[in-house]
Image (cartoon, rainbow, N blue to C red; front, side, top):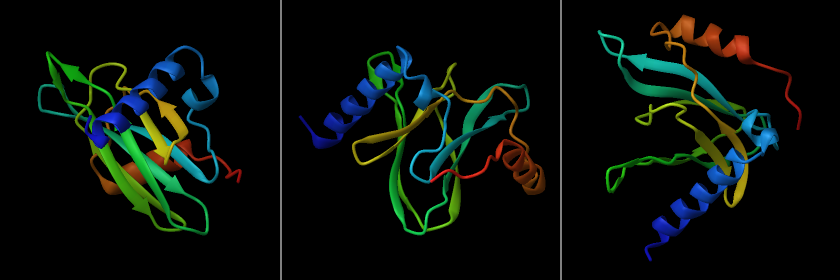
Length: 145
């Protein structure tokens, strides 16, 4: 089996375990200085969802390598979203995902450790940068490292 498929299966098992009761991770609480925010949805002119929008925050003093993952199967095709990236210290990344089917659950992990699980926000994502910043600030909470 291809290594990427093994990791996708591991992440899918994490989603399944979260779905049966890992409320701590599902709440999207901060773990070890990393936090996942569901910001909203980008919609087309008729109101159909095109993307879900996420923010990942690193409030620590070191770079962190993370994976944002959302399982999705369309017919027989695996159309899951998966993005691996490194966040520098004290930064935040805003990411859009093509997984929009309700509840559009996304997982944030670091190596083999699950950091957070969150369903996508049903709100429309503000297109103006200042509106997006205020939407994120409204969700902000004091850091707990």
